[in-house]
Amino acid sequence: MAPLAAAGLHFILFLGSVRENRNADRVKNYLVNSLAKYNVSVTVFDPRELNYTKVIQPLHYYEKPEDAPERLRNLSDVIRKADGHIVVTPEYHSAIPPSLTTMMDQFPPASYAFRPAAIVSYSKGRFGGIRAATHLRTWLSELSLVHIPSVLAIPKVEEAITKEGKTTNKLVLESTDALLGELVWFARAIKTHAQVRPLQYKGKAHFGGDKLSSG
Ligand SMILES: *[C@@H]1O[C@H](CO)[C@@H](O)[C@H](O)[C@H]1NC(C)=O
Ligand SMILES: *[C@@H]1O[C@H](CO)[C@@H](O)[C@H](O)[C@H]1NC(C)=O
Ligand SMILES: *[C@@H]1O[C@H](CO)[C@@H](O)[C@H](O)[C@H]1NC(C)=O
Image 1 (cartoon, rainbow, N blue to C red):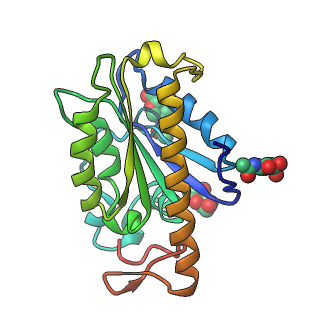
Image 2: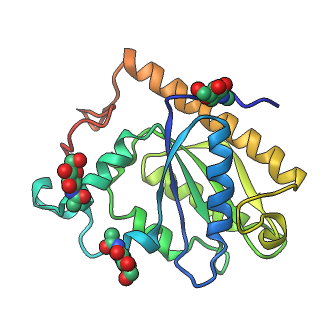
């Protein structure tokens, strides 16, 4: 299936691992390559690079937003301006890894509100991290994200995807097309509609990455 043209959209890819020898980079490289086919530009939020390893004072815990570190406010703006998100997760003991929630919890639901989110899970074993993906649906809803119907769960990730992010695995390729096709569809639908009917989040004009107002 030829990918939908999606020029002009911008997505964020959130990674959920800081482990040594993590497989997150395979999946990241694979998805960045795949998004290029759709002409979607992408920013990677990597907990290893951002160094958000504890949740001490998230953005919304500052009394006045301008008291928050500039870097945190800037990153929130990047999230608010994105048209959609891809959340990439391994599975730790059937659950969501702490590095993912620690990074994403730095920002309030207002930063994420109403954007479509796709879940990509992976594991070394047979189940592809699907149990973490299932937990993620509940959690992403709490962040005010709208998760799309499809999930991409990648089993035996070390066999399925090379370090450079290449795959010939038919199941992975087909599921990726389905996932990205849906995400692009939702992203474009919400973006277009919001131009006619601007979104309100808790009574405040929200859409379009306007200046942080609610913290
Ligand atoms: C992506 O952009 C290039 C260059 O603008 C264009 O040739 C190509 O058709 C686009 N592909 C899609 C899927 O939109
Ligand atoms: C995060 O930590 C790494 C290693 O300690 C360092 O190289 C990097 O510059 C830090 N990044 C930021 C944004 O502080
Ligand atoms: C925050 O963003 C502004 C405007 O783009 C930039 O000038 C500033 O250097 C950024 N600050 C940090 C800490 O990233």
